[in-house]
Length: 155
Ligand SMILES: [Zn+2]
Image (cartoon, rainbow, N blue to C red):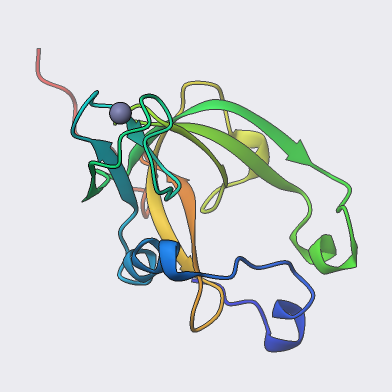
Protein backbone atom coordinates (compact mmCIF):
# COMPACT_ATOMS: atom_id res chain seq x y z
CA UNK A 1 0.00 0.00 0.00
CA UNK A 2 1.12 3.49 -0.79
CA UNK A 3 1.84 5.48 2.29
CA UNK A 4 1.36 9.20 2.49
CA UNK A 5 4.72 10.80 3.14
CA UNK A 6 4.88 12.18 6.70
CA UNK A 7 5.04 15.78 5.50
CA UNK A 8 1.84 15.22 3.53
CA UNK A 9 -0.04 13.35 6.24
CA UNK A 10 -0.08 16.57 8.22
CA UNK A 11 -1.75 18.39 5.36
CA UNK A 12 -4.49 15.91 4.56
CA UNK A 13 -7.31 15.88 7.09
CA UNK A 14 -7.35 12.60 9.00
CA UNK A 15 -9.93 11.26 11.43
CA UNK A 16 -9.18 11.30 15.13
CA UNK A 17 -10.28 8.14 16.94
CA UNK A 18 -12.16 8.78 20.18
CA UNK A 19 -13.36 6.37 22.87
CA UNK A 20 -16.49 5.42 20.87
CA UNK A 21 -14.67 4.71 17.64
CA UNK A 22 -11.55 2.99 19.05
CA UNK A 23 -12.78 -0.50 18.09
CA UNK A 24 -13.64 0.68 14.58
CA UNK A 25 -10.17 2.13 13.94
CA UNK A 26 -8.40 -0.79 15.61
CA UNK A 27 -10.27 -3.22 13.33
CA UNK A 28 -9.30 -1.22 10.23
CA UNK A 29 -5.66 -1.47 11.30
CA UNK A 30 -6.23 -5.24 11.40
CA UNK A 31 -7.74 -5.13 7.91
CA UNK A 32 -11.40 -5.42 8.89
CA UNK A 33 -14.34 -3.05 8.59
CA UNK A 34 -16.64 -3.29 11.60
CA UNK A 35 -20.37 -2.91 11.19
CA UNK A 36 -22.95 -2.40 13.89
CA UNK A 37 -25.86 -4.83 13.83
CA UNK A 38 -28.94 -3.87 15.81
CA UNK A 39 -30.31 -6.77 17.85
CA UNK A 40 -33.79 -5.20 17.91
CA UNK A 41 -34.56 -4.19 14.33
CA UNK A 42 -31.70 -5.85 12.38
CA UNK A 43 -30.54 -2.49 11.04
CA UNK A 44 -26.88 -2.52 9.95
CA UNK A 45 -24.86 0.69 10.12
CA UNK A 46 -21.26 1.59 9.33
CA UNK A 47 -20.11 4.41 11.51
CA UNK A 48 -19.97 3.76 15.16
CA UNK A 49 -22.68 5.39 17.14
CA UNK A 50 -24.05 4.85 20.60
CA UNK A 51 -27.53 4.01 19.31
CA UNK A 52 -29.20 2.40 16.31
CA UNK A 53 -30.00 5.07 13.73
CA UNK A 54 -33.31 3.38 12.88
CA UNK A 55 -34.90 2.41 16.20
CA UNK A 56 -32.74 4.09 18.84
CA UNK A 57 -31.80 0.82 20.54
CA UNK A 58 -28.41 0.51 22.21
CA UNK A 59 -28.29 -3.25 21.60
CA UNK A 60 -25.63 -3.01 18.92
CA UNK A 61 -23.30 -5.83 18.07
CA UNK A 62 -19.99 -5.32 16.25
CA UNK A 63 -19.36 -7.72 13.40
CA UNK A 64 -16.75 -7.50 10.65
CA UNK A 65 -18.10 -6.81 7.15
CA UNK A 66 -17.58 -9.32 4.35
CA UNK A 67 -15.59 -6.58 2.61
CA UNK A 68 -17.60 -6.89 -0.60
CA UNK A 69 -19.45 -3.96 -2.06
CA UNK A 70 -20.94 -2.48 -5.23
CA UNK A 71 -20.47 0.99 -6.72
CA UNK A 72 -23.70 2.87 -5.97
CA UNK A 73 -22.47 6.24 -7.20
CA UNK A 74 -19.12 7.86 -7.92
CA UNK A 75 -17.41 11.00 -9.02
CA UNK A 76 -14.00 11.44 -10.62
CA UNK A 77 -12.10 14.38 -9.18
CA UNK A 78 -9.82 16.03 -11.74
CA UNK A 79 -9.09 19.21 -9.85
CA UNK A 80 -7.83 18.59 -6.36
CA UNK A 81 -9.73 20.54 -3.67
CA UNK A 82 -6.42 21.70 -2.16
CA UNK A 83 -2.64 21.34 -2.46
CA UNK A 84 -2.63 18.29 -0.15
CA UNK A 85 -4.64 16.29 -2.70
CA UNK A 86 -2.91 17.56 -5.84
CA UNK A 87 -0.69 14.50 -6.30
CA UNK A 88 -3.71 12.18 -5.98
CA UNK A 89 -5.80 13.77 -8.79
CA UNK A 90 -7.44 12.45 -10.83
CA UNK A 91 -9.07 10.10 -8.34
CA UNK A 92 -12.48 8.55 -7.89
CA UNK A 93 -14.67 9.18 -4.86
CA UNK A 94 -17.12 6.34 -4.38
CA UNK A 95 -20.44 5.86 -2.70
CA UNK A 96 -20.41 2.10 -2.20
CA UNK A 97 -23.19 -0.17 -1.06
CA UNK A 98 -21.80 -2.86 1.19
CA UNK A 99 -23.17 -6.38 0.71
CA UNK A 100 -24.62 -6.05 4.23
CA UNK A 101 -26.72 -3.08 3.07
CA UNK A 102 -25.29 0.18 4.39
CA UNK A 103 -23.70 2.73 2.09
CA UNK A 104 -20.50 4.59 2.75
CA UNK A 105 -18.25 7.15 1.09
CA UNK A 106 -14.86 5.77 0.14
CA UNK A 107 -12.21 6.07 -2.52
CA UNK A 108 -11.12 3.89 -5.40
CA UNK A 109 -7.69 2.22 -5.54
CA UNK A 110 -6.02 -0.40 -7.71
CA UNK A 111 -7.28 0.88 -11.05
CA UNK A 112 -7.81 3.95 -13.19
CA UNK A 113 -10.55 6.29 -12.01
CA UNK A 114 -12.08 6.24 -15.50
CA UNK A 115 -12.60 2.48 -15.17
CA UNK A 116 -15.10 2.92 -12.33
CA UNK A 117 -18.66 2.07 -13.38
CA UNK A 118 -22.04 1.88 -11.69
CA UNK A 119 -22.66 -1.56 -10.25
CA UNK A 120 -18.98 -2.51 -10.36
CA UNK A 121 -18.06 -5.17 -7.79
CA UNK A 122 -15.45 -4.16 -5.25
CA UNK A 123 -13.60 -5.46 -2.26
CA UNK A 124 -12.27 -3.68 0.76
CA UNK A 125 -8.62 -2.76 1.20
CA UNK A 126 -7.40 -1.10 4.37
CA UNK A 127 -4.89 1.54 3.40
CA UNK A 128 -2.63 2.45 6.29
CA UNK A 129 -1.97 6.15 5.92
CA UNK A 130 -0.38 6.66 9.34
CA UNK A 131 0.55 4.35 12.18
CA UNK A 132 -2.78 5.02 13.84
CA UNK A 133 -5.11 5.40 10.89
CA UNK A 134 -6.01 2.93 8.18
CA UNK A 135 -8.67 4.11 5.76
CA UNK A 136 -11.22 1.80 4.15
CA UNK A 137 -10.86 1.99 0.38
CA UNK A 138 -12.17 -0.23 -2.41
CA UNK A 139 -10.53 -2.02 -5.32
CA UNK A 140 -12.10 -3.92 -8.25
CA UNK A 141 -12.62 -7.66 -7.74
CA UNK A 142 -12.00 -8.80 -11.31
CA UNK A 143 -8.45 -7.63 -11.73
CA UNK A 144 -6.77 -9.29 -14.69
CA UNK A 145 -3.42 -10.55 -13.52
CA UNK A 146 -0.24 -11.09 -15.49
CA UNK A 147 -1.88 -11.68 -18.87
CA UNK A 148 -3.47 -14.92 -17.68
CA UNK A 149 -6.77 -15.69 -19.31
CA UNK A 150 -9.65 -16.20 -16.96
CA UNK A 151 -11.01 -19.74 -16.73
CA UNK A 152 -14.15 -20.18 -18.78
CA UNK A 153 -17.31 -20.41 -16.74
CA UNK A 154 -18.97 -23.78 -16.82
CA UNK A 155 -22.55 -23.88 -17.95
ZN1 LIG B 1 -32.40 -0.86 15.58
